[in-house]
Length: 295
Image 1: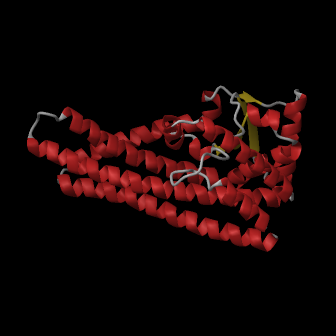
Image 2 (image 1 turned 30 degrees about the vertical axis):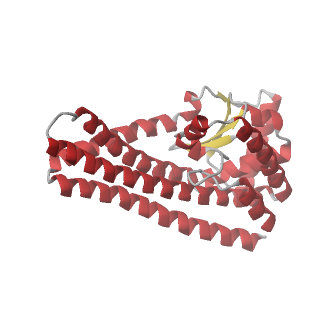
């Protein structure tokens, strides 16, 4: 099993790096295209710094996500909290990870979790629904998955690629807003805004496809790493099957507007799972179950 895990890890890392380079080149190419078509570096710099400002705002939001989601940090004074914190410590020890990891309960009823890193610590957010409904083996699998994101710096990769995507989106939004305000103005200015807006939207769509491809690769790797840390393949399979039941329940109730909100949710790329599809941040649960069974 160890050899299979190692091969799967190397394959996912190579592909994620390749997609990330393509995404960065796409953002650079868009800025160069704007400068070339407008022949105005001052205007290009204005667009660049506008997009950069939007990126900084999103980064600051993500860096304090647990607070913004009205989470509660787990402490060993509470028995249930202590059980979860013990799992974290056991898995950190198994992985040889010495950095601090905070665990927060998020007041959401769904079976989900997420992880991100700051300069001096990792943070795992676990939804209240998961805390209440998962047994110890399933919780270990969930935490192992999120901890592997922190240990492998997946969260840095995912946040970095997400911010590039935000950068592309901000540029597209800039030209769409310019086009709205240019109605009735000079035809040349309107045409220029249409062309640059169309190019920006195409870049954004390609960027989204690359971003979600990166995310799916990292999520598949995290499942494999979680099994390595917990040494309990059955616990991960039990967790994924429980999430499959949850997915079926949600799909019966969801409408197209909510589905679109889930896809465009800025936090979706951090979660343990989400609904399947081309713009899904995670591989389909059936595929994840198959991969774990093959280990």
